[in-house]
Amino acid sequence: MPRGGESLIRAVTECSKVPVIKHYKGVCHVFVDGEADLAMASDIVFNAKCQRPGVCNAMETLLVEKSVASEFLPVVAQRLAQKHVELRADPAALQILANPPAGLTLKPASEQDYFTEYNDYILNVRVVDDVAQAIAHINQFGSAHSDSIVTRNEARARRFLAEVDSAAVYWNASTRFTDGGEFGMGAEIGISTDKIGARGPMGLEELTTYKWVGIGTGQLRG
Image (cartoon, rainbow, N blue to C red):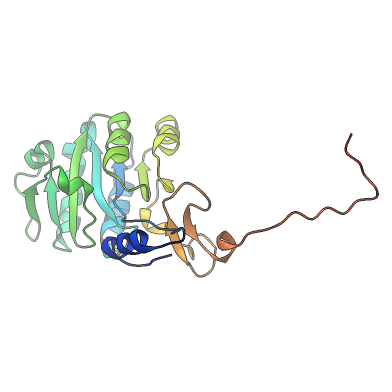
């Protein structure tokens, strides 16, 4: 189970003669839905990006529904400016943030940016039409690590939780919770984004195997 950056994990995987439990990178997302509590969304976005940006469960892309983008983005940009975050934004977000606050750098986002794990105070921002487009973006550009929706709308939240193909999905919570200790597993041994065996944070129990023991009184199969 390699622990480290993407290049180390890929090198171990390529050289290994035994199965490797791994996550290559953490390209994590927060989607702010049109029915989100925007104060809560601001807190979650700030925590997911800035609480500890150099870890795999930190947010790398912020998706905002267009119906609330003009209201939400300037507010959250003011908070991100406190940490001198660099925003790499799509055309719609660039237009909304045309006059960024002091301390915040604004650049156009490239398609490659959406695949990138920065581990730094850099954040992609994209305005999307709805939850369907947010899900499609995450499943295309994400790394199947940790993704969150902020919304009051339970139907949209349930759809997001079901259709985003990631090891950990959240409703109204920060992606920073994806951790063995936070999940009650004790010391975390690793995080897996594979789909065979354990997925997500892994503790000792997730690495153990088992056998079946049958104790009978003469039972026979008919």
